[in-house]
Image (cartoon, rainbow, N blue to C red; front, side):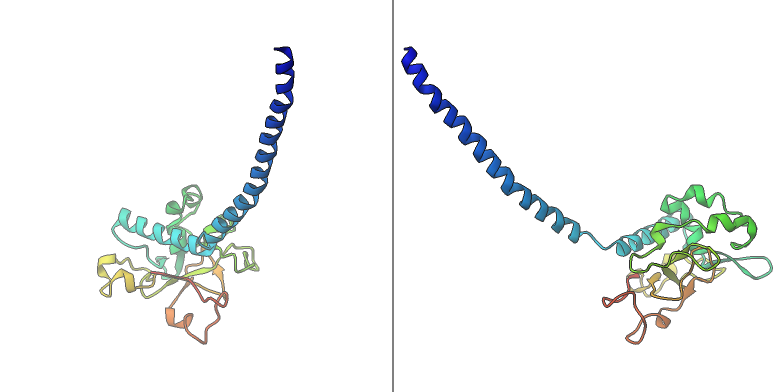
Length: 211
């Protein structure tokens, strides 16, 4: 009986060794597959600028759901001067309510009292295609502009007022140059001025537009 047991020990050892070798081989094979799938998943995610534009779009719609109107392209002061931008007004809907509450809406965006607020970088207003993040005077930039035909300065319109339908109406546009601070109430344009075959785009793929 003892002889039989001693003869089985090498067989048992070989079985364990075989299991260990096979396991190591499987692990060695699975890691490259995992890495390949991980990189494919990462590459399949929407570009950051498209995700940012989607968040801006959701913020505009949530603003509309709350106030039953889109934000004005700019708040106009009593003296008739553009004071605050639509991008400042949708901050609470971009998880930036704390920053929004620091803005003194009774004073212009570039008043010394508001300077520190508008020097704060808002990641969702930036595109990875551009390295410019601040203006020469230190204000944080936005790489997106509003369509002033819809986001009209001093005027609130409802989505129901858009006769062409929201699926055919541009709300905001990604631009490639002439960036303005996100707090600048003149950060508006007409789509025809920045969209077209002869217009500069962030890259060869063109610009993202928000409908």
